[in-house]
Image (cartoon, rainbow, N blue to C red; front, side, top):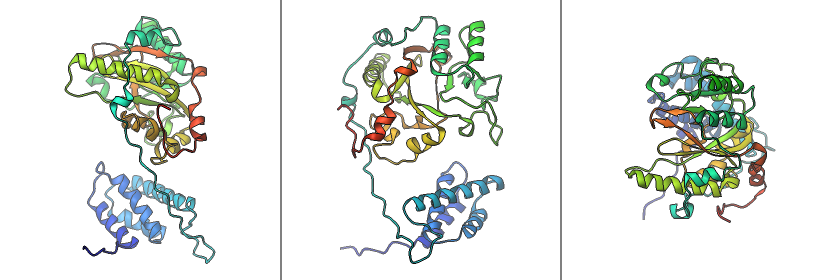
Amino acid sequence: MHKRTKPPSKAAQYSMALSKIAGMSPGSGLHGAIYRAAHLSIEAGIAPETYTADLLMVSSRAEPRKTQEIEESLKEATARKEAEGYNPDDDSEDAPPPVKKRRRRKMKPLPEEEVFRGSMSFEDLRADSPIWIPEDPAEQSILWLNTLYYPDEYLFIQGDTPEDKLPPRRGYVGQNIMTIADWTDRINRQGVLDEGTFVLANPLSGQPDADGSFRSTAVTTEGRFILFEYDDPRDVTPEERQAHLNKQAWFLYTRADCLGIQSIVYSGRKSLHALCRVGLTKEEYQDRMLREGDGPLNWVSRFIIRYGADDKTKSLCRATRFAGGYSHYARKSQELLWLRDTSDVPDHMHSISQQQTSYFRPFV
């Protein structure tokens, strides 16, 4: 029988975390390592100024970025501890002991045969759209824009050619960021947008962030939509891919109310993009979508992970396909297949909040 060893102290874990950070570079998980060190510093009772000095010494990041990130990591670590009933600054006898967090059961993807239990052609999906969809791609673009957004809201739209991926890819007002009214006028004059392959689903403020970017989380005005999309199946024939897309179409159609789907767009080649209306503020989106762990009230865990969809779509600034826009990769316009008015989308986020079940049964 192996002898059970005593785990290292929090102070020792903190020192090990610093050593790990010292050998890391941006893009290798440095951001998460800094936040972990912050939590360990709180656990070990290390003073904030000591933690800041330690991080400034070992981190290789640029000075302004480091200071801001260190402050944010400490703020989050302290807030989390206080939420658990423990304040590291309170060393009195009346201070409550730390509350051990209950472990959540992780949502596991359902077997594919339980999710895709039927098939539906694109023609049938489009025929059953609550809002009639015109044949002309430019008219589809205008309909999509004015159904999902208000005329004075800013939206980022971009093409998929190599030139489009160069500056001004970051976004500039008047070029690839304009109001819905201006995009509508441009399409009316120009027709199908050759540079209209991708769109950031959530509206922007039209103002730059601290780094001068017009298309970042900081200048996103709200968390109105989240993208629901499946990864492209690999090593399949065109017939097999279309059969899989038809299964996706059936699933999205039958679960439209459950997911809060407002529109479904076909990329022209290998994927369906469903925009799910969650109607949250930016702060609520961060809490409900990204920071609530794997519990049943977390939208990403409850739907995206449970149904086996692509979990990289959860970002507030995730790009989706622009309805009616031209895809140079697919060499065709992207087709709007299904659309409904905002008033017809159920407030499923409220119903999720009211449920106290520890696990979600998708088809009950």
